[in-house]
Length: 161
Image 1 (tube, helix red, strand yellow):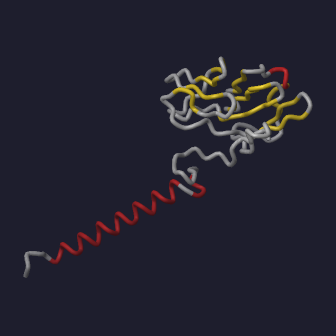
Image 2 (cartoon, helix red, strand yellow):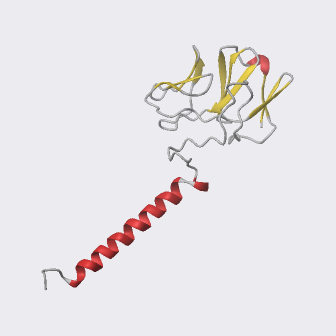
C-alpha cells in the first residue's frame, strides 16, 4: 500500500457530495423563486423605474392590495416624498408630475425608512440615505438601492399597482 487507507477515497467522495449538495442548495436558495436576483444580491425588483421617460416603476408592491389609493398627487411634495409605513412603500416626486415609488425597507438591515428630506429617503437606524430619483444609495452603510415599487398615477390619485 502507498499509505492511503480505503477510507480516504470514501471521505473525498463524501466531501465532494456535500460540497455539491451545498452548492445546489445555495443556487436554489439564491435564485429563481427563492427571492434573490440574477446578481445574487437580493435586490430583486421585477423591473427598474423608467428614469428616461419618468414613467412609474414596474415592480409589484408587496405592502397592499393592487389598486389601493395611497395618496393624492398634491400630498407628495415636489423634491420630496412620503413614507407609507403600513404599506412599506415610499412615494417621491423628484420633479413636478414625476412620481416614483420604492420599498420603504432599508437594504442595509431591513429597518423601515423614516423620512424624506433634502432629496433623499432617510433610514434612521444606521443613517443610510437613498436618492429620491432612483432609490440608489447616496450614503451608506447600505450598499444596494431601494427596490422600485409599482404605482399608477391617474388624475390626482396615486395607487398601488
